[in-house]
Each structure stands twice: as structure tokens, then as C-alpha cells.
Image (tube, rainbow, N blue to C red; front, side):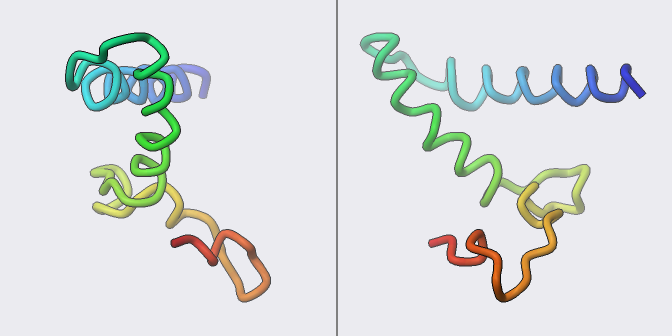
Amino acid sequence: MGQVLHGKAERFIQTALREWAYVRPYPTSEHRATELPIWLHRYNWHRPHGSLKSKPPISRLEMNVDNLLRLHI
């Protein structure tokens, strides 16, 4: 099981480097850091994932009527 988790973490890091950290030149590290929460939101809520049948990771959570996450904009 540990290898599976390591593989998922490594894949996430590769994706983050490719789609966030080095997707474009940032003027400063602070600018790059400011973009991280925006990228993480897109990654978790909107980006299709092949391993999830092109659904975003948030789709794995059971969200009922009382769950605040369902209020996502």
C-alpha cells in the first residue's frame, strides 16, 4: 500500500511542477506562491483526472444537502 501512496504523491508532484510551478515564468517566488491556491482549486474541483474517469477528485466525496462543500462556486 505504501508504494501506491508514494506513486500517487509522485504523480501529483509531477503534475504540480508541470501545470503550476513551471507552466510560465513568475517574476518572484511570492507570485508563484500566490498562484498555488488557485491551481489547487482547479486541480481538485475542475481538472479531469484519468484515474477517476475524467472526473475531478472532489467528485469522490459524498456531498449531501447539509455539506458546505456543495456550495462551491
